[in-house]
Length: 88
Length: 394
Ligand SMILES: [Zn+2]
Image (spheres, rainbow over the protein chains, first blue to last red):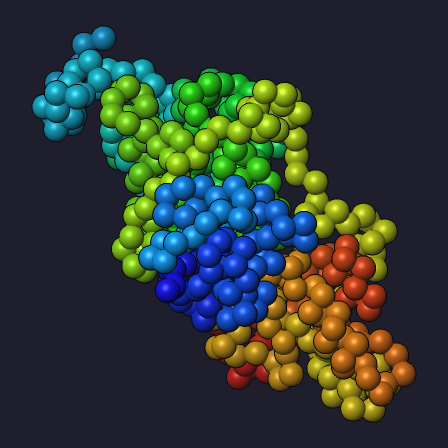
């Protein structure tokens, strides 16, 4: 069963503008990998070459901050992709 | 200090709130707030703070009013176009509330002037449109021990967070680092005009509560608003012990100007070539015979690209360029197949600014071909080469 991924505005160019998409996976790493198969390139915008979350990105599962890509994700959870914005 | 009869009338709806009353209104009158950026966010926040009777209200900006600002920057009118933003704003705010003092700082904040500019104010409101300026302001506020109400917007999405010295995380705790190129601004991506109205009003609300000492602030809570789905959300943000400015062992002890985004040196920048629209037209016309192939990269946002683009152009929005440089290198080797030399890469955008930034990034990333900037962008192309060409608004 899938979890819901809420996509930050600057990353929606990957999801054809969709604010919310589905993805599957038992942990953050798996969910992001699944996301990347459907929206090629989106993972690299959030995660660097050393599998670290980029410093202008924050991930939350439901309302818990993600600190490790091994953090579990359960069916029905919502993964929030949050990106620093600069507009004023 | 006793209130005058007109003040009693002006603030009657505040005075009847038990949480404000005469004592609270007097606190507002004795407070000093500085709004940085007289733009989409600064407009509503400054208007509401002036209306609320903040005794000294300062605005910091160095820009002039552009017609394209009026879609969201409600401080200004048509008559203000081409005028100094802070001067026009000061006039508007003084007209709204002649009982307050309005100060116009017509300057660009730098590491050298920021501490002196912000020092006298009780609350700082960040409504700027560059991420490097956001870090400069955040660091100055941490160093000075000033509360900072931040907000930012992009297309249909807004964020807000309030920093309270010693009591909560700062903007760097939220996002330790970001570069201007990674975070698109409104000029690049567009923005729903009313969105900063919502977020700027939230900033004014935070500042007023802070001055009054009432309610709960957005301290340690990132508020997000998606105007497209009408969804507010909030996420807890913890203070980072390793924060570079507010952590246990800070490495930022004085404000610092941002290093150039792609760390290009003057020598590297000299590697960038420039092309006028007519030169590019000639170059494209002779592309078939040329031994040097040409790759056109349009760095505008997809919605701009869709409205009209040059034939054969690939679309890589500027905010994605750094992450997609490899892809570009791959398409370079693809397009040079069977030709004797490496392709020229021409970056284009609406007016030539984003494409120049792209050229700098290409040099910084050691993309081997010499990057070429279409000077003046597609607006110049439409003016000088193809009057039928549709240049989408940002
Ligand atoms: Zn911090």
